[in-house]
Amino acid sequence: MDTTTIVLLLIGVVVISVVIVVFSQMRERAKIERMRRVTALEDAYNRARRLYEELPAPYLNKDIKLLLLHRMEEICQQLAQEKSALPVNDWLGKVTGEKQKVVEGTDEHPDIRIDTPDKANYVKELLQGLFKLVEFLHKSGKLPANSARNHLRYVLFLIHKTHADLQVFQAREHIRQNELRKAIHAYHLAASEMAKSSENALAQKAVQSFKQRIRELETELTSGESSRSAEQQNRLDKDWDSFLHDDAWKKKADYDD
Image (cartoon, rainbow, N blue to C red; front, side, top):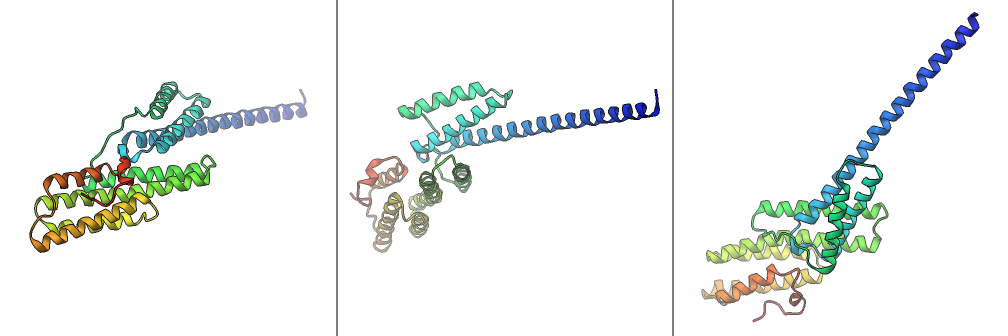
């Protein structure tokens, strides 16, 4: 075997070795990239699932529920394409069943009472996650501009309502302890929060109602006599608690008798 042949063989061995190394690296990079995609999709599914299961019931209107379920369904389909070892079929079956319940109006969700700053911050965190999801869906072309804008406005309204919920709860406690000045201050803060969503008809109604309640408390503070019975106060509380899902709110006047 002459020198030229030996050199060519050595070059051939080197080339083949390089090709094998490059191919192995490419496979490893593809494997890592696939794992990254699967992990990202799993995280996205868990985030959407958390929003669907943990947001307070009154906050989840039908459109938001279907948006979250559609997002979970889409993620399951992508995971199936990645041939993930995750229980994708189980997830997809669950989502399908939940969509049917939403359409039928038989779905159930927790009704969290926002009576502490921690709970208010917790719900606000969830709503911020929902806001980011809507933005992502719009930027990725999966949600039309009009729908995205409406959803974002609604989520901002809910964030303001979350803070107002806490102030209303504190105002109720102040009234029970006959601390009317503190109650009036709390209602002012609640009105300020809802005024941030001035384009929302429900927010406008809430602001008017809070102002009416403030006037009543100021009159009571001046006269030293209560203008509302316990039964009437309970009705006021129930009106606010059912604020988002009681159609009567859209038709009735401000905390009228």
